[in-house]
Amino acid sequence: MRRFAILLCLASALAGCHPRVPQAKALGQLDGEASVFVYLEPPSPESQRLTFTLAGVDAAGSAGDTPLQLATPTIGFEPRQGQRLLAFGKIPAGSYDGVSVRVRRATVKREEGTADLVVPEAPTRVTAPFSAEPGKAVVVWLTVRSVPPPPKAFELVPDFTASVPPHPIPELLGLSAATGWDSLLELDMTRSRVVRILATGRGPQGVALDRLGGRIYVALSEQNEIEVFDLVSGEPVVPIRLNAGDAPREVALSPDGQLLVAINAGSNTASFIDARGGVELGRVPVGVEPWSLLVDRSGVRAYVFNRRTNTITVLDLATRSIAATISTEAEPLRAALNRAGDRLYVAQAGTPYVTILKLPDLSLDRRVFVGFGTTDVLVDPRTDLLYVSKRDENRIDVYEPLQLLTFATITVPDPVSYMVIDDPRNAIVALMPERRGVAIVDLAGRRVTATLDVGDAPYALTLFQQRP
Image (cartoon, rainbow, N blue to C red):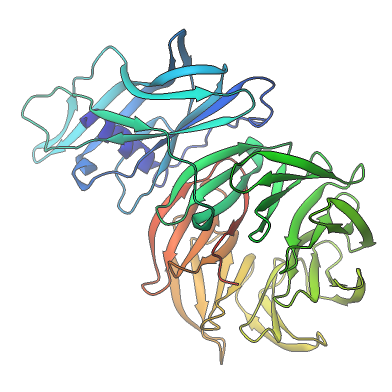
């Protein structure tokens, strides 16, 4: 049990000393194999004195064990940590009894100092039967049952349990594409847990969620298509083919779910697609290196932010045409609308300013000094507070809506590239690509309440109950 606590602490260490997870490119390209992801559950407070180093984690099968890649070799306690990735990898399809955990070293903090514990020589097998189907992924949650105060003896007695989470409830879902894994992660936002992982095609990036039609759309940047999944079953349906060399980067839906817009970084175009029929209705040229896409709440316009040409292409969704093209300052990346929908806040990486444009005429309202390296801006439609993240800073700056002066700073574990608001929890979900995780930020207290690992090269986030 204590040994599992150490494991739990190890997962916590992902936040502290955060070694690079071995990249497993093309985990989604299984070719008859399956994949498994072992997540360590959050630690109990009693585990804070324990640290240990793992020798390995295996998928335990009746025909033999299959070694997995360790996400981190050393576990140590960290306050407010959430679920952590422990191990992952491809495995042969078939039936498995659970997982096997091997501990190399364990230590415990005591009043007189740190002491080594004697660890078992044999692996600890943890029962959690699962079936690994060809071409699919399995998530296993590993938990420590309890962690009593360390006894006077110096022997580590492992006490683990494991389980396979049930299928997620769509209304609770958050989605994050792990480009480095060729996978789509489904998150239970109420519990901050990874509940299911879907193998995708090559290079998944932007994700759109059709809440009415029950579908998920994923832009496959290396496969020139948009993959489509059933929201409930997670099964793939017929993909949407694009042109060779399109390399779609982001996708967004009109509010009624009928029209899907894709920006294609390879061809510098935007595609208009009949979402339900899966047919491209037309396309228009945009600027060089289209970086992101924003559809307004009315479904009348979409805005494409072209990083290389320093322009915004405005799309008329009804006529599927270009309504306007305007120049910006250097490297426009992302943008957000205010509560009234009459101001567009533009994040620009190459200037120390956020530019605010009046809508619908796109004239300049004002510029707000925020410093260089802006990665994302977020406007809370309830309060009109402005949140700004930057690429080299472990913080999110908060600006009041009238004078647009900084009045608060939220400390986060790592720099943030993307932010959305979980409406029921009144929390920002902030993507931290260097950590390969997200931070849950309570908006009332302006503090991180949990973190969660979401895979290699995470790209973006979308939530079923996202604040519009």
